[in-house]
Structure formats: structure tokens, C-alpha cells
Image (cartoon, rainbow, N blue to C red; front, side):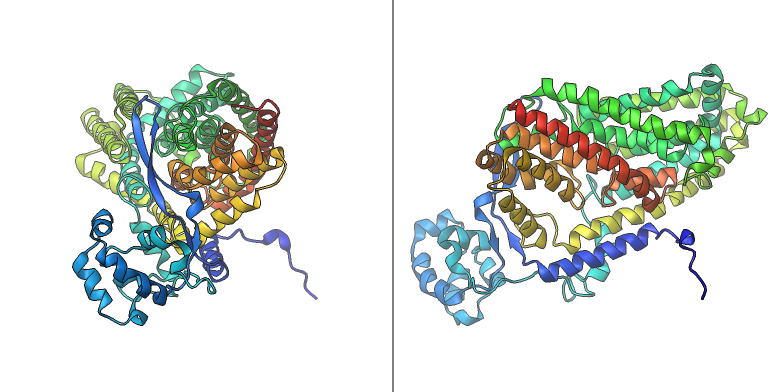
Length: 570
């Protein structure tokens, strides 16, 4: 009998892993009935001291998806139609309502009632659960195949729907466009040889000081995450940092850790991020940016621990590079950085291109922090960077590049990240299969959110705090937008904190760490997938490294929450 060699097990491709996750999520929708919340606008003071608003769910309005109780509606709507003040208050279509009342109530459905302005929220606000036949809980499950225009969404359409979801300001369309533009721009920049020459110049000048580079980079990127929620912005930075870190003797995993992971670590314990802590505190009804002292101490300690963890792994790889699972894959970067005379010749043209890059990076940081620049502006800024580098290369005849070569390098650079762009769409498809993240639409995800909130009631304070943290971590596996997660979870977690006896500040802290730490792991994170694509790391290989680091982060988070409960952090 032939024995199987288990050491030859081949790691599944990221595409295959995501497809299996899509299937599992689709299966969950058969088991978990759909639910929804009513939503409303809340105002809060943002990090700039200005009044901002956010659409959030109302925790006490959760209801399952039930069939409409049309006989009850038939007994109530005639009186409503006669109440002109109420009709005007609810902005109902009087004529459409009259037409509905002429038809048989058995034929009524939510779609026909919507035409008169009698949405599910309006009816629920008027009559509560009486509008439903509560003996039946309905599931909202996607078909096998279909589109919104033909038969309804089918889960086999998850890739296309994921790719076209969102808008230019976020996932997936915005991130996909950013990846292609940045990839093209750096295709030009890398072809000039400026980054290669610059890396060697730095290494030659800092012999023996390589080990100090990693913790310094870790703290810098963590600071970016803590101050302005750095995430998508890491993608283009990684174009430079990956070959630099590999040239120092480490691997691409170390490069992603000191850039993207560090930024998310900073976000997880931020004292001032306008996209996470400020929004969460505003929704929770506590002073925005309060508790900054404790969070600042946490940032220093957690970032230091994260840097130390990274250094332990990095030193092991530096001493024995073949131990890295990315050793073979990283050869493409080593090939680009061959130690020949041409690569070490740091010419004037190279220096000008690196100066242009520095100026654009300063422009980006200034724009993000002062002007609120986001994906559209950042993508355009990197296009400018690539164009300027290309023209400089032509003028100084770097690598004999011509205008046609610049166009060709842009094309090949964009092509290199096309596969990563597909992963972004696939990952977004997971959320769509679960019914989406809209609290005001029936979905299995809303039911999961409601059920976890109920499960945490009546448990000891410390257990409740850690339970909130664990839930926020798991929730981030499907909803990676920090502001979106805050809008969905904080309206439930804030009052839940009151019930279990912990402060709302602790509920916000649990949200921050759950969302921030897990962003460095989840395959649904468009930013992470973008950085991994730049580094040439398959997510399945990344997960093997990150799962241990996530366990380390989770323990740190638990210790912080235990201390916060003990000191009654307010």
C-alpha cells in the first residue's frame, strides 16, 4: 500500500479559498433567517470639533423577515388614507394608496406598497410587529445564478457583482481603479532603475545599521494608522518598501508587516483617527477623542510589542533566508536588485526621480490630512508621479527609455496588479452573498449582529468586554470598513455596555482593536489584498504567518481590556 506524502500538500490558491468561503456563506443564508433594523440619522462632534452626521441602526427595531399580514393591513390602511395630516407627515402618495385599496389585499406585497410610500420601515413605525405573520421566519438566499435585472442576484455572479460594487470612493470599484493606476505608475518608476539605485545607495551608507530600519519603519507606519487611519495609502508605499526590505536581507512578509500591519496596529489603538475612534465615540454618545491618554500609552506599548514580534521573525529569516515560505517568490525582487555596476550607479536622473517621489508622497500625506483627499485624488497623484518619473527618464536617457517604452511599462505595471484587483472583487462578493452590510435591508448578517448582542447580555463585566472584542474581530472578517463597522455595531454595543456594567469607552476600545487587528488578516480587506498583490504574496501563505500574530494581538487586546475594566476606563 502506497503511503501519501502529506508534506507535498499544495496550499490552495486564494481564488479557491474565497470561492469556498462564498459557498459557506451562501449555505449559512439557508440556515439563518434574514433580519433588519430601522435606521436614523445621528449627529455627533467629529475630530475637528464640527457637527457631523451618520446613518446608524436603531437597536430596538430589529425584526426578522416575515410574510406580510395583509388582512391586518387591509383593516388599517383605509383609516390611514382618510387621515390627511398623517398622509402628509409620512409623505405618502395619496393616489397610489387609493389604487392599492381598490385591489384584493391577498395580492398586496411590499413592492406594491412601496410605490405608495408605505415602506417596511413606515409600516413598522405605525403598527409594529402586527404587520407580519410572525409564525414564519423567511430566509434571504441568493439564487445559484442570476443578476438583479434577470431573476435576481445569484451567488455564481459574486465576482462581477463584487467588482462593480461601491463607487470611486471605496471598495471595490475605487480600490480596483487605484490598484491599476498605482501599478501602472510604479511600472514606469521601476523601469527607470531609480528605486534600485536608491536602495543600494542607502544600504551602502548604512552598513551595520539595517536592524534599526525595521522598528523605525514600524513606528512610522503605525503613527500613520493612528493619526489619519492609513490603509489604502499603504499600497503605493509598499511598491518601494518591499524591494527595500528584501534588499536588507529579509523577505516580503516582513515588508508587509512593517508597513500594512503596522498601520493597522496603530489604527487599533489610535487616540485620534477620524475614521474609527472619532466616529465610534460620536455614535456611542461619549466625548469625541476622550480617553486619549490611555490610548496613547497603549499605542506606544502595542506598537513596540508588534515591532519586537516582527524583529524576532525577521532575524530568523535574515540568518537563514531559505526558511521563508516566500524565498522563491522573492527572487523576482532580488533579480531586479542585482548587485552590478549599473544598479549601483546613482545618477542625477535617479536622484531627481526619487526627489519627485518624495514630493508627491508629501503632497499625498498633506492632502489626506488637510484636504480630505481620498482614493480618486491619491490615484491621480500617483499617476502624476509615474508620468513625471517617465519624462525624467526620457530626458536623462535612463535605461534608454523612450516615450513608447514609458507607455508599455505603464501597461505591464497595471497588468501585474490585475490579478489582485480580481481578488478585491471576489472578497467583496462574500459580503454580497451574505445579503450586504446595509442594516436597513433584510440579511443574514443583520441577524448574526443582533444574536451576538443578545448573547452577551447577563455575563460578567470582563467576559462581556472580551466578548465584544471577539465579536468585533469576527465581524471584521466580512465588514472591513472601520466607519461602516462602527455604524453597524456601536448602536448595539454602546447600550449593551450599559446593561453589562462596562463603560461605553470600553465598548469603543473593543471595537477599535477588533477592527484594527483583524484588518491585517481578513481576505475581505481590499487594502490588504492590494498590498499582498504588490508584494507577490498569496493570501493563503500570508494567513499561515498572520494566524500566529493575530493570536498574539488578541492576547494583547484581552490584557488591555482587563486593565480597562479594572480601572473603569471612562
